[in-house]
Image (cartoon, rainbow, N blue to C red; front, side):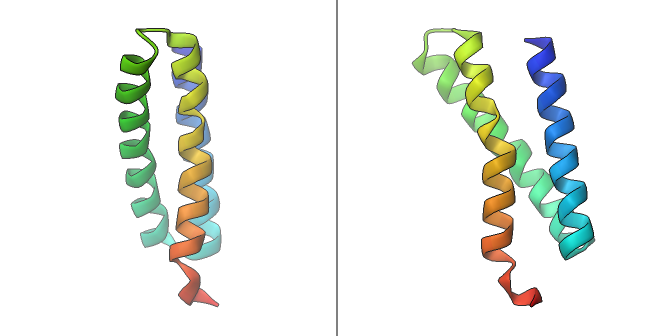
Length: 80
Protein backbone atom coordinates (compact mmCIF):
# COMPACT_ATOMS: atom_id res chain seq x y z
CA UNK A 1 0.00 0.00 0.00
CA UNK A 2 2.99 2.29 0.48
CA UNK A 3 3.60 2.35 -3.26
CA UNK A 4 -0.03 3.28 -3.91
CA UNK A 5 0.22 6.23 -1.50
CA UNK A 6 3.53 7.38 -2.99
CA UNK A 7 2.26 7.25 -6.55
CA UNK A 8 -1.01 8.90 -5.52
CA UNK A 9 0.83 11.76 -3.81
CA UNK A 10 2.99 12.28 -6.90
CA UNK A 11 -0.09 12.20 -9.13
CA UNK A 12 -1.87 14.82 -7.04
CA UNK A 13 1.22 17.04 -7.02
CA UNK A 14 1.63 16.73 -10.79
CA UNK A 15 -2.01 17.58 -11.42
CA UNK A 16 -1.71 20.57 -9.07
CA UNK A 17 1.40 21.80 -10.88
CA UNK A 18 -0.34 21.48 -14.22
CA UNK A 19 -3.32 23.46 -12.95
CA UNK A 20 -0.88 26.08 -11.61
CA UNK A 21 0.57 26.53 -15.10
CA UNK A 22 -2.80 26.73 -16.80
CA UNK A 23 -5.03 28.55 -14.30
CA UNK A 24 -2.79 30.09 -11.65
CA UNK A 25 -1.77 29.60 -8.05
CA UNK A 26 -5.15 30.02 -6.36
CA UNK A 27 -6.76 27.38 -8.57
CA UNK A 28 -3.85 25.02 -7.96
CA UNK A 29 -3.98 25.33 -4.19
CA UNK A 30 -7.74 24.91 -4.03
CA UNK A 31 -7.63 21.87 -6.31
CA UNK A 32 -4.82 20.36 -4.21
CA UNK A 33 -6.91 20.57 -1.06
CA UNK A 34 -9.97 19.33 -2.94
CA UNK A 35 -8.09 16.28 -4.20
CA UNK A 36 -6.71 15.59 -0.72
CA UNK A 37 -10.22 15.67 0.76
CA UNK A 38 -11.54 13.53 -2.09
CA UNK A 39 -8.74 11.02 -1.48
CA UNK A 40 -9.63 10.78 2.21
CA UNK A 41 -13.32 10.30 1.45
CA UNK A 42 -12.65 7.64 -1.19
CA UNK A 43 -10.28 5.81 1.17
CA UNK A 44 -12.64 5.71 4.13
CA UNK A 45 -15.69 4.73 2.11
CA UNK A 46 -14.04 2.06 -0.05
CA UNK A 47 -12.09 0.50 2.83
CA UNK A 48 -15.41 -0.03 4.61
CA UNK A 49 -17.27 -1.21 1.51
CA UNK A 50 -14.59 -3.73 0.51
CA UNK A 51 -14.12 -5.08 4.06
CA UNK A 52 -10.52 -3.87 4.28
CA UNK A 53 -9.28 -4.95 0.84
CA UNK A 54 -6.41 -2.51 0.30
CA UNK A 55 -5.76 -3.47 -3.32
CA UNK A 56 -9.22 -2.46 -4.51
CA UNK A 57 -9.16 0.62 -2.28
CA UNK A 58 -5.80 1.65 -3.73
CA UNK A 59 -7.10 1.36 -7.25
CA UNK A 60 -10.11 3.51 -6.44
CA UNK A 61 -7.84 6.16 -4.92
CA UNK A 62 -6.53 7.04 -8.38
CA UNK A 63 -9.91 8.57 -9.19
CA UNK A 64 -9.04 11.57 -6.98
CA UNK A 65 -6.49 13.27 -9.30
CA UNK A 66 -8.64 12.67 -12.37
CA UNK A 67 -11.77 13.99 -10.67
CA UNK A 68 -9.86 16.95 -9.26
CA UNK A 69 -8.59 17.91 -12.70
CA UNK A 70 -11.99 17.57 -14.34
CA UNK A 71 -13.82 19.49 -11.61
CA UNK A 72 -11.23 22.29 -11.57
CA UNK A 73 -11.53 22.86 -15.31
CA UNK A 74 -15.32 22.73 -15.20
CA UNK A 75 -15.51 25.24 -12.35
CA UNK A 76 -12.70 27.50 -13.59
CA UNK A 77 -14.23 28.25 -16.96
CA UNK A 78 -14.07 32.04 -16.47
CA UNK A 79 -10.34 32.24 -17.37
CA UNK A 80 -10.99 32.12 -21.13
